[in-house]
Length: 454
Image (tube, rainbow, N blue to C red; front, side, top):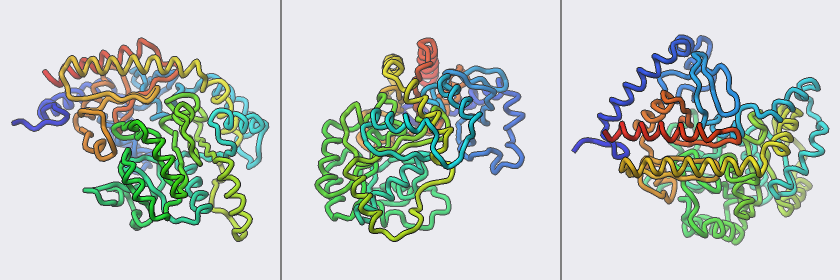
């Protein structure tokens, strides 16, 4: 029997990938000349290593991006469903954000002091996300680090708990995985000399008995999780999971941190507000300032009181939290514009409607071509997964990856004028995404599916 991946023969995948790579190169002579052999002066020829991780033969060099369309230096236009892997979830340079940036650029970009935008921003964060106290950072990785420091400080506990398959940016202690049921450092970590599993516990998502057992020792300061596992093959919470998660953490005196950096696709207040989650800590990065590097982290009133008490008794000195460019006036201006004028109920209604159309179109194509794949969605975020579903946990998600097949699909989509996220099969709908673009993606996906099973 011929070897397969995702139900498609490896020979067929290789043939399509070779043909699509040739087509890609022929359409991008300028990009190939610029980046085909890397750019001198940059490690590995690119300013950030993951630019080489796209499945295309070489990076697409962007001339401009507007609304939900990218134009490369060869003049090719791409309907953009990657949207900077959520960083531009509301479209490229939303008009209110661009206006706010221009205004603030004339007034100074950073000065370690608040601007007048802060007077509105604090109230906006409280009203939008529910928690009463907030801080500004530059990335979600930073915000998660700072929030975990607070959790350890107030609980006087050394450990955190994550779910297998999790993604929380570059937070070191979350870089663990389960291998044959045993905790290990995530494979491939560069320069990591510590056994991260000494202070990080890990269980499978949706496994409440395992969570209960892991917290029973009373040494876990905080559970950090996304409401839905993303940045992998998407895993949705089973009915009752979040209620159980909150009850178990409270029972064992463990704090709960909800990271909404990707699941903000759910609605204006994220998954947390839509489904009435009650986190002690909340983190949001990427799209909160419309593409300007910024993040926010908030805490409950009870946690704030505990942290105040901790600060009164700790020895004087630098807390070790904060970076010089965090909480700068450019961030304030951009975030205010996003929260007031971009993250609106009207925009989310548009996003939700087109995401539903996209999910149904992909499902219909999968069924028509009799592929054992499935589609998952959380609000404006849609993923096709080249395996049966739904998936239950991170172990299932890891087993569902079909890297060669997915790479072939990604390049074939680019050649048909569509861009999706490079490291998984994620597609986002923005407020400026059009029905025509969605239908173009559905048609391209169907064309590729037909070729794969031919």
